[in-house]
Length: 225
Image 1 (cartoon, rainbow, N blue to C red):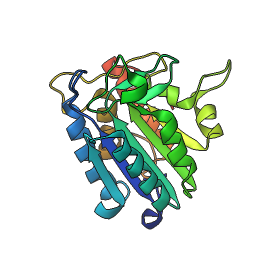
Image 2: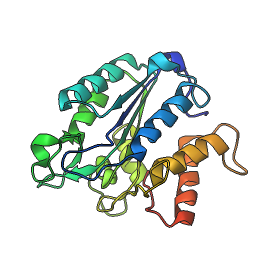
Image 3: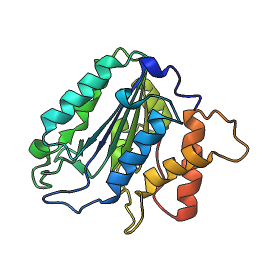
C-alpha cells in the first residue's frame, strides 16, 4: 500500500482485548489481530514478523505502556498503532482503552488512558504516526471538535492520522458470529480486495473512503478519520 513505505524503518503494534472480567467478551478481536498482523507483516506492508508486534489480552497497563514506548522508539519512518476492544469514558469524558480487568465504574484507575498513547507517539522519532482504534467513542482520540473543524483537520493538527471506528458518542459493533468486528472487517476487505477504480497503491484517505462505503452498505456505524 502506497501510504506505508520504508518497512525497515517502520513499526506496527496491534493491541487487542477479547475477554474481560466486567465487560462483554469480544471474541472476534483475536481474529482481528491475527489477520492484520499477517497482512501488514507480509503483503500490505512487508514489515516482517520482527517489526510487527501483537499484544493480546495484556496483563497490565504497564505492559501496554512499555510496548507502545518500545515500538514508538524503534520507528523512524512510520509508526502504526492499532487497538481493538472496548472504549470507555471516565467521569470527565476522556477516552480510555479497556484492559481485561477494567471496571466501568472505575475507568480512571483500571483502563488505559488514551492520553498515554499520545505521550508514546510524541516520544517517537517517526515521521508519521497512524492510529487505528476499533472501539466505542474512538473519535474522542482526535480531541473535542470545534465548529467547522473536520476530523481529518484535527488529526493532522496533532501530527497523527487517526482512523476511528465510531464517533465521539457512538458505539462500535462486533456482530455475533462474525469473524471480525464490523470496522476491522471493512479494513480487511479493503486491504485484501482493493477498491474498484482506485490505484493499485492506496493512500490512507482512499482506504478510509473504501471502509466508509462498506460500512454504510452494511448499516453499521460510520467511521471517522
